[in-house]
Length: 282
Image 1: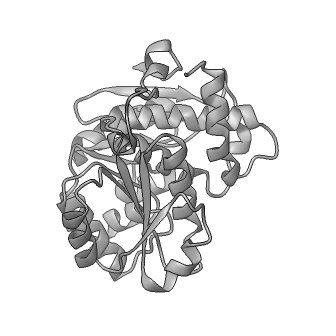
Image 2 (image 1 turned 90 degrees about the vertical axis):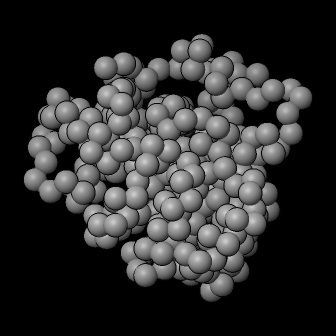
């Protein structure tokens, strides 16, 4: 098992070419939930921008668009209120390079339709929170997972997918994460103080958030939404699933560690530039 650390080789992956333009860095589409529940998607969108996605769009139902418009003016909006609308948009906007589903998406019919459309598109995607609940509840969705997908469950969500799984020790979590990645055919990031990232080809890596870079204030509402956005942004930029998950988790932890006590989720995206400076990224 390898350690996830900010080595010079890993840090260099975040860099941008001096002669590139925005479309060279991809376009992330973040799917939002209904009105009054769009904050999670907006946190993810802000994180995707900060990590370097060239463009970021939030897709929301008509009733939630005005609420989403209160976010950063750098984030674009698109009305997407059904799976059919998502499929149509992906066909028209061929420059979309990653999808993010889950943060307060909703576990209703619309959420399931969006999940089906997203997985059917065979695009790089990050699935979190409500998306993981839908995977556990709607069997055809789990069967549609593929190698370009990253799942980011916490322990409770993991147990919804795999009831009765032993996750009491770090060794048990390692074994379970590897088995889950192989069974589902996608990358699995099992969140916790010692985060694990497992790929379906048997690679597993660990990020220890207890010893070298402790960040206890990361246990706060919305932090997982930011992590989803970071991974979505990296997928948009062309990082493969395992690489995007490892790099996103590392950046997420360091942002929290540098901020320290008093951290709330909305602080995390704004800490990304400071982390890059800490790592001497040009």
